[in-house]
Length: 350
Image 1 (cartoon, rainbow, N blue to C red):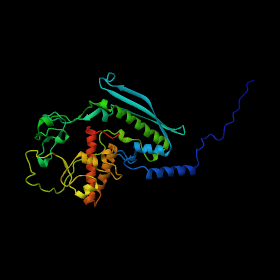
Image 2 (cartoon, rainbow, N blue to C red):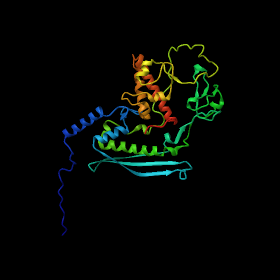
Image 3 (cartoon, rainbow, N blue to C red):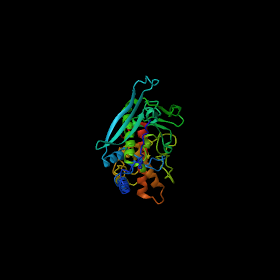
Image 4 (cartoon, helix red, strand yellow):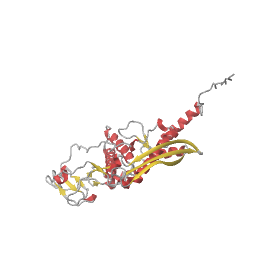
């Protein structure tokens, strides 16, 4: 005779909550207070223009969240490939890192995430083509201002020889400015590795702290190209130039961005600028944000956020005088530094 085993099913088959509703509400309020009172918009998180309305969590914000929740960060390599000579990739060097992050609290796993980065991502694989001076061979060609005769200039302040070329000169305009393969991609191996680690950290932080209600993944890492659309300003009612400044047939002055602003505004921004003096990349890096951080210390994502904020100010009715000049200056500074980072003139902030 075969015996039949009888099993009694447990009535409570659902997973019990780890806390009660009061505890969940308190935890949510604590998180809300931390985001609003501790994290800083523009440095710990920020909305990347064109990517939606939910803020993107940045690396400094992820680190603060981990500290707030008492989480210890551990990195481990999941996979990597270092093809320095390109023997496995058709002669093109290839570098790939895939990292994992585990967040521990009192020795117990609280959350984990993965992040990868490789040298074939557009921002690492290519560089924007630059026009080269036919005389000195340096990529320092810039376009002259129309009010000074237009044409092209080998910009001395970027290391050029100062040679001038007329508009239509095919030795300049015949050169391609399309994206070209990055010849120095091997110099970016450490940057690519750090980017993979950062992406893994942010993914793990969002998972462990349930911060997805407030933030999304680090979108700016995956956006190709720039973050803002920018066009040169249209100057209303321009002041007539004196006869000494007019030069219809030649490039008479180095085309710089000229700020028409009051000296007191410049001093308030900790800038050495004065009326009608050239606004340089060095000046742009000295401009400070509301929290006292110089623009030269901001990442491209943070600069993009700052540009967007100043653009909003300029679109408001009634913004005049020093406030308008300050917004214009900060917007120009952010754009200049972003362009310089993209062209490789200055390095991106880690």
